[in-house]
Image 1 (tube, one colour):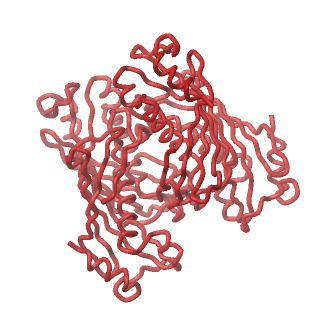
Image 2 (tube, each protein chain N blue to C red):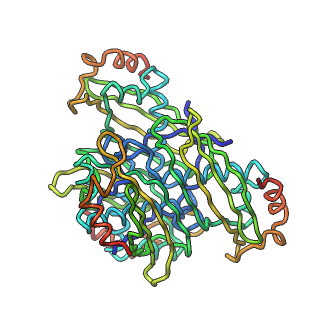
Image 3 (cartoon, each protein chain N blue to C red):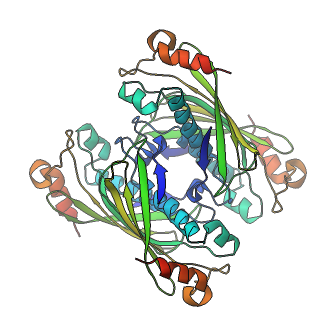
Length: 133
Length: 133
Length: 133
Length: 133
């Protein structure tokens, strides 16, 4: 479980967190999750692998603001030969869901070509497959 | 048509625009669009109406980077009693689609209660309905 | 001592943290510091006091990047009737100084008028004076 | 003269532009200025030269908010063998100064070593010297 404390600069003049920041928190939680399953993203980059975001979707359920504590649960929901699918549930300090989100990701080698996960990155593929819910 | 010039600070260490910025560009283009149809958002706020984002989704088609020119076309795709639905197509200077996106929005009055658009904000409702494609 | 873990979205295409983020980290550390001396900023805002930033200056000593741990020490360096002066030293996980910074701040009441700190906000004034180094 | 239109996402819950954004606008105006004198920054990067920011300072004179038009004048105030010094005056649509700022910059070659501007990048050095006020 990853925790993000809402910063003042993340609010907008509506008095709440600007909605674009949830996409950033998804990244924070995702990279934490990858580290937890043994694939820290900085190490992946050092190994010549980058992972661009293919899609994101956020459904905002409740507003957040400065000082809130946001707990983010990341779940791998699928993985095929070239794409990883993740979902996110973000809850505040009162256990209210503030945002539900999904993202998909591909993986590129140092030549910019897509990596076939099952064949060319099997340890990662297996780690994800073992964590899919 | 709204145009955004990509700034250096919008890139990340992958060398490309960080994906969260497309959500910000959606806002830029959306507020421009609202102004075009006669409902500038600062005027709406002055009138006591705010419009939180209910959902966003982005599908990234091609990377962008510093100096690119991104033209964003906003289309109203639907409007019901309480929600507005918009879609976005973002193209770079070579006419390549870089991102396709959607968002939905509700409207709150100065008491924080949802506005029923057809009944309580009919001029806006009509302006949107006339622009739906 | 406040700690910030560098996020991926804080980097730019030079591969390092974009320099504007250090100004945001100053805010994170400053609001943490205010909480530590008994004046949490959300409570101040609830009491009708806001504190705009009057000036900032940053001197960048060493680059940072994704995954770095930045420890930030905030010191009150002065306080007069209307302004608070703070300094910041930011060190990475190797104890290298990455940034030295300063900021000044005024305080406004709910009518937007400047607060005379010694007379109108004496508890805060005293708390700062006791912490000046 | 560079112009920035203030975006909604640049505001914070004080209702005004978050002060960190002025540092970003300095970058926008600076890269525009470099383009104007014939040294577009993307071209410099392609030539293997990067220019980290050494220091920034901002003095905030007046608040800005969503929809404001900020005109930014950049002036080269000095250049020595290794550093460039710039100053910035930012005015809003009413000709009020909102921020005065300064920055300094060094230049690194593709090996990460500092470039001696007068000797190793003489065209740029001369262009700056001709523009110093």
